[in-house]
Length: 402
Image (tube, rainbow, N blue to C red; front, side):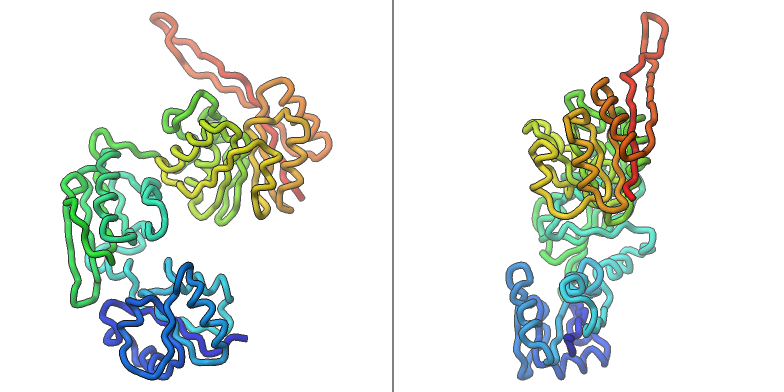
């Protein structure tokens, strides 16, 4: 059991902003662990100081090697909100840890902007792709974003302007709570190119121009929301497919024969805490999937270039849901997907060709599940009039493993 480890959130005001309890813990610490910026705020004392090192390795090692000593981990603001506290909890568990939070960047930024925090989308691009913001960009949205460095606001402003949100108001709040606190505000279209303070949080009030591009998170986006070569599940069928896949927080989807990646992308858009892997054996399509994921705000989508089921060996873990859009008729495909699923996983396969429809029918005879016929027709001009133009029918298999 690990004893005497306290994670303390510390702000730009250093020790002056801490509670008497937090200061007393620091004063009696035998080992201090944290980033250089945080360690510099605690001067003097006969105490061992350890910085995190690459990937937190040095700091984690110091915690393990000093078990039983009074260890204090210094973190930014609230250690459990995009902070090191959550990382340590995953590695060690909370047994033997005590957490003393301070006001985090989101709370401070909301106070500076006069915004109600529950009505704001709080996200981070610190160590994460900037395109993550695309998922949250919509008219009237208020965003608070933890930056990677001083160049982030300018890059963010350019991205917003490119999407037709040039009139959005950005405010970069630097070193909040400290003596060097700064504030820079401008529209995305007029944002200065010079970097701001490296330690900054960006507040964004999204204003959509007449050419702005944004999409709802409800599954069933139009085909032209994606780059594709025609190999894409039609929006009506895709909406029905996502309903049967049932995205849930923290769960993982494998999208087999992903084509444009539309199903996996909409899975992630519906539930941002979920995970997804898109498998596609054609190089050009795999590249398209990655581009679509970035544009639509889910750059975390993992793209595997390879053919299923052989590509399964490249993956760790067990998926909670598998969608088979391409390769349904490949011998053994559906059974391999079924075997790969978790104990209560969902399998959905869309069959268009006769061979694929025979495969889902045979699978259902052995493993059960539902078969649903999906027929979609859209009105199109015929001379001066209009007529319904039918797409190829889809026989959809939906099965739950038990």
